[in-house]
Length: 549
Image (tube, rainbow, N blue to C red):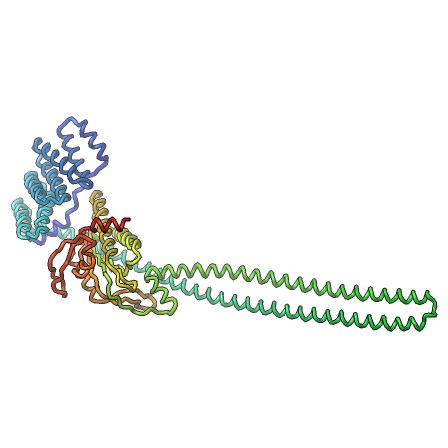
């Protein structure tokens, strides 16, 4: 019976009040309000509006609304306004006043017959007692509420029937989620297949590059051969020119002797002979120049053709190199998404990465509270969207610190570590990151509460010790860490509280001068015995100023 009542409390929806107007507009309307009902409504809306930003203002307007409801003898509004004041005192961490006003709300709700508000008041009132570890009083409060419903004629069978309807609806939602998970798994297989095709394409481009380089080498060898042939041709031409000059000189000497012997011949005959020799020499020189010009033109044309071929080959090679470089960068980016840069560099250079032991590593675990029950209230698209938003925010927070490495996510759990750089690192930055994660989730919680939607709350736990880190797998390798430190960090997270950062005694000893912490005592951890644990409150003011500067 108690179990059924507890399940009903957990599955009731959050009471929603629409806020269509701004606080300034509501305050202006309150000044101009004439009737008591108008003032009651506006005071109540202002109390709800200030609940997210100013607990003190919310209490002030809530009490004014309560007094107006009492003047009107409106038990329903008395219950709602008293519950609002109780919530405001909870935000102000004033549990004593919160108890009083929740009790007032419970009494008024019973008079008004508001079952929903009775359950919400009992839930809030008993939570305060549970937080104070007064479980007997918490049980008594719930038991009184159960007796009230029993007296009003609400039978166990009615409660069970209502619970069964809710359970069937949740089962249907779970089936939809499983279908969505199957679809995502199929898409993941397609992405893996695309990555393999890219790797195959990269190998093809590497082979093409090798072929182009081989072709360039052959062209360069051909150019060298042509240059050698040109040098040999130049040498032959010079030799022929020397031979022509030698033959001409010998022939002139012979003609001079002949002229001396025939000096007595007529000058006309001698001059005619001389003119004939001069004409022959001019014709010989002209033929030589024509041969040289033709050879030079052919050689220049050949060099021009080779130059154009080489330039086109270089252009094609540059384009292919650019494509190869783009694909290489994409491959490197994919590799760095799953491995730290030193490990990725080692893997690319040697084809494998050695496992390493680190003596002082701080491991962080985060896990969402009531994830299963919240996921059953969301559609598959909304669930994936919310998880993606939270994990992207966590990734961004880690990116602000160069000594923190994301390890993996498992369902709704998130795991990261600091100190994997090879030197003994301090856990200051990873604790700052944990506080920023809780701050982000708290802001999301306030926004979701304002919209009346489910929200995530997380437990975060940290422990410092030695671990072994390395890459496992071949086709779908993954970077991971192992060791008792990881197990203890998981136990510290499991024994934490939502919205808070829980650390072990080992981690506390390294950060106690940088952070204000609340000692929780020795806490029993599964399979680990008693462990001293601390809640991190905030960073010390002096140290925070130094970090900011």
